[in-house]
Length: 132
Image (cartoon, rainbow, N blue to C red; front, side):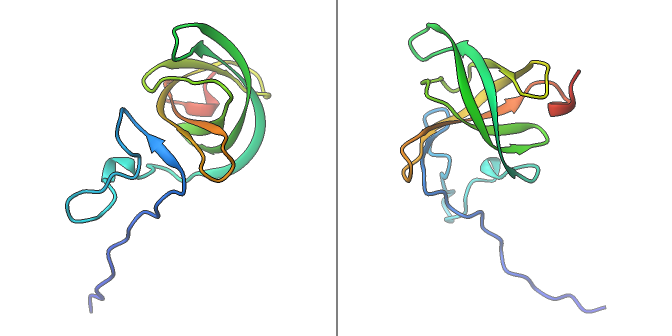
C-alpha cells in the first residue's frame, strides 16, 4: 500500500472581527495555523429561522430579544442579535419548533460586511437541538 502525502488543512479565515474571551476567534499559533480550539467540532449548516433569546446584556440588564439563527451545528449556533451579550453568559433560546434551550455564549462580534451583531453559542444540553 502506498501512502500519499497530503497538504496541511487550514481553517479559512473569517471576514468578521471577532472576540472570544478577549482573543480573536481567528487567533493563529506561532506557526501561522488557526488555533485548533477555534475549529468547529461538527459541520455548520446555514439556516435562517427566528428565535427568541433571553439573558443578561453586557450592562447587567435582563433582556428578551427576537433574533435569527444563521448557522447551526449539532451542539451550537451562530445567532444574529441586536443586543450586546457578553462572552461566557448563559442565555435561553426559544426556537420556533418549541421548547427552550440553555446555551453559553462563546463568541460575540460585529460582522464587517453587514455590520450586524452576532453571537456564537454552545448548547448546554448534550442532546443539543433535540433536547426535550
